[in-house]
Every structure is written in structure tokens, then in C-alpha cells.
Length: 220
Image 1 (tube, rainbow, N blue to C red):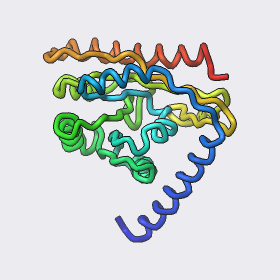
Image 2: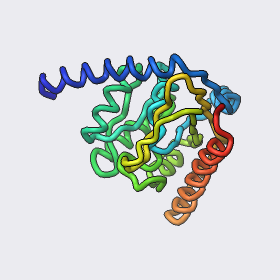
Image 3: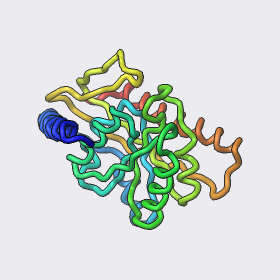
């Protein structure tokens, strides 16, 4: 990376860190389903957290300094997200289905098997389509014996960026944020190509249902 770009990203990630922390410091936060994660950790079960791309912002905050590793694309936007993730004490894995996918998959596989890291994956990828699950999450879970835990959050007051492909959201100051861990999706050790499609649909339904539940019962 050129010196000019390094300087630009340095200031962007510092500014983003202050803005995100500044907003969330004013908010009340409620965490639901933590007992699910504690049980999985006690059992030594590898965990992949799956969520829609629009929920990235608070998820980076939620998993800061936990050792969880987010999968982030090699795109220009991905570089920005990666820089912010680094600022929050995370160690991103870079790659996507369109670029660097094989290398990223191997790094994620080793992180789950050897390092026992928890992994964060945007199930609809870095570019969408919106709410359409990519195959990689299921295959990664199958090859590592991991469970997939859908996660989602909402805020009593938030900004939705309607013109972005993912309808990206950020919480507004002085709101209540509710973050939820759902029941894990258990993947069989052997799955056919047809079964992967069925499991993708099951994962989509699980994340959509979690999001709908939060919308129907918004933070207050």
C-alpha cells in the first residue's frame, strides 16, 4: 500500500473508532442468548457467527478484542472495514468468492481447527444480493465441525442507508441496542451439493426470522 493510502486509512480508522465508540457509549445495550455461546465454548465447539452485511457496524464493536476473526473482502470498501476492524483489536481474514477466496477459506479453516478462533461471516457476502446466502459458510462449518450461530441487532433509533445495496444501518446516539445470539445451526459432517442448497435456505430463514423478531419487538 502506498504511503498516501496508509496515511489516509490511518486517519479514517482513527476517526471511525472515535465515532463508533462515541455513539455506542451513549447507548444502552442488551445482550440476549449469551448462555448459548457460553455452553458452546464450554463444550469446545467451534463457532461461526453469520449475519447480513447491513449489521456490520455494531458487530465490529460487539466482538472487539475477543479474538474473533471477521471475513472481509479484498475490495476498496473491504479495506476500509478491515482497517476499522484492526482498530477494534480484531484480526480480519481477507478474501471473498470473487477474489482471494481459496486462500481465505484455508485461513478460516486453520483458524477454526488449530487456533480455535471464532469466525464472523456476512452470509450474503460483500456485494450481495441482499439476504442471499453464499455456499462458503455451510461448507466451512461442515469441514471444521463448527456450528453456525445467527446473530442480529436492532436499535430503538437507527439510520438506514436506503441507497446502499444492503440497506446498511447504524444506531443513533442515546438509543437502546438489542443484540441477539440465536440457536446454533448444526451441519452434518457430510453433505451433498443439494443438501448445501437446503442448508443455505435454512440459514437464510434463521437469520431472517431473527431479524423479523427484533423488528416486531424493537428495542425501547
